Length: 293
Image (cartoon, rainbow, N blue to C red; front, side):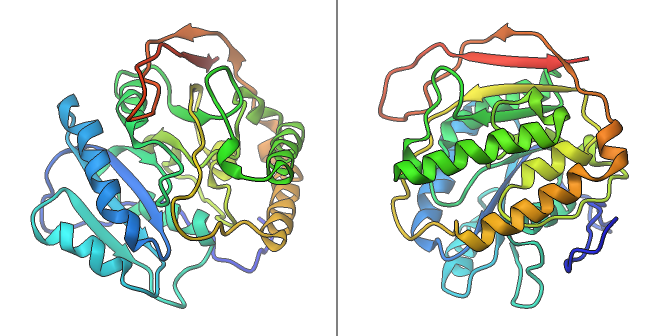
């Protein structure tokens, strides 16, 4: 593996002398200076997953220098199924991708669902995404903005939407295996953690799903359309520097012979009833696209 200036990470569970409760789903939420959304996130995740009967935990992987850790710890302290993994300055290698890899390694569940900490991803989709994984429908489930029912208006300007679409097209061209999903750069996704067993990840930048799909041992993938919302607070971390970093990372993945040799799954289409993902809107029946060998 080529040197990248960041440490490669293999998600390995750390043995513990305390036997934790059985957990079906770990919801991994990376945060940075998002204390204002923590309470809303915890409540919406509870409303989404509580009625399912699944045992879940919410793992915040926090890279903040403000009061966000205290806001998270307040929920942990009153017995909510919430845990805090705070990465101090100097231990934040890999940015967003590195934070999610740290979450994979620390997850107590057999499945992980990844969602942003800024409320641009609808937590209401966590329940149907969990069902896709737990029922064995697919190894990976991806929230997509690029099929019927999906939308990327939350990106804001037309320029950002065009840049996002171009990035998606280039990624799918460079890595044929990732053509199994219409949205390889999505930050809303879930995986069965067994697909990372023995896999060495090289996390960098703000598109961790690309790394997971390129290196992970998955054979089936499903998609759930969603509407990408506007940030209620703060500013996006997207920048030209992030774009250049991703381009370098994508080039490295595309030049990796082992990754290039991996077989692309063949697609089939399966329909499921899904909620709209809008807590204030009507329920709607949408489509999940399932791909497998």
